[in-house]
Length: 421
Image (cartoon, rainbow, N blue to C red; front, side, top):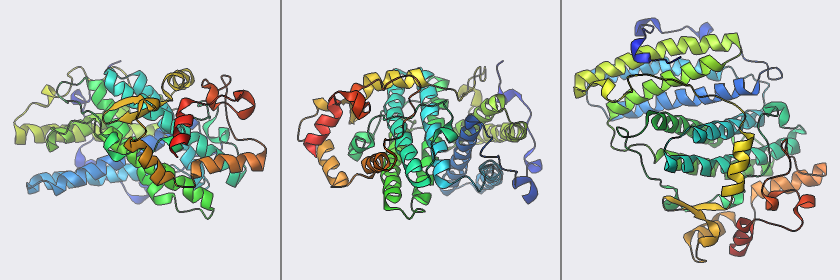
């Protein structure tokens, strides 16, 4: 059934404020929560953090005091929504257990977006980074077993496979090669806009999370692993944010943000199995419908534009869904594991000349110690083998199979990278 938030009536803004008891929600039980309930909450926390930070940036670039006041009112509610969602995470879920949830979000979210992206170039943008976040999940799963002695399937279930992606050691690229070609919002497919706003918020939240919690461990291997992967998450935010339309006005972006939040809450509300959490999403959706109405009125008043010239009149006909993507990820691994980026394009690393800036950058950052490689070696030494969860058979890339399965094969990516080191 289609859903058009422009045609719905939300909760009046002056009725949206909640007290501390309402915000201090009961957390889920980590041993009972469905993995995708966890991932939906992590993603929606990122959506709300983006809403708050975007509103602050818009306020800093706005002269009209009446607009500043309206932004402040909505932002206060967005901040409350963020607390209610983020407070669902229980205190007994360790930092790395939360991290595994973040990376499961990255894998299954990015795969869904790629599968549902109508623009071929943007689909390639998602496919490219998908293999990198897939590898991060594998590295953190091994760190989890190494320092806590537990297996990641206790957090992720068997919904997402855990095995090497594009190895993190080869993901570090010169900043010039992270800039992508932007879309034009007015010409883009509505799904492309929704997809881009979703991934930017999700990856930004992962970047923020790692920047703040990566130093919470005593073990040098854990601190190093977080530091290395945190740098890739900053790369990914650059990679994704540059596909957004830089010509869109502040008010146009505000409208798109509120429209996007309506889609996100409608999506997770439709999918959520926990009735208490679903009630939170339903409440927030009704709040966001009003935020969208306010943004639309601001556009009519200030820019003299009809919001329905920007937003599709039919509303939404399908929502984002967390679901298993094992076959899709394996297909992308099989076909794209050897890619790197060059300017705004994606090319096999073997096509780069020996003096390319990629190899010089690799030499500078990797030096003589790569934490994400070391964590695999240390965990294999401690437990007899590295941790993997390969439910669909051996790794689709022969060079990334376990040593006993590899028969001396390695991917060209690894060979070229080792020559450059």
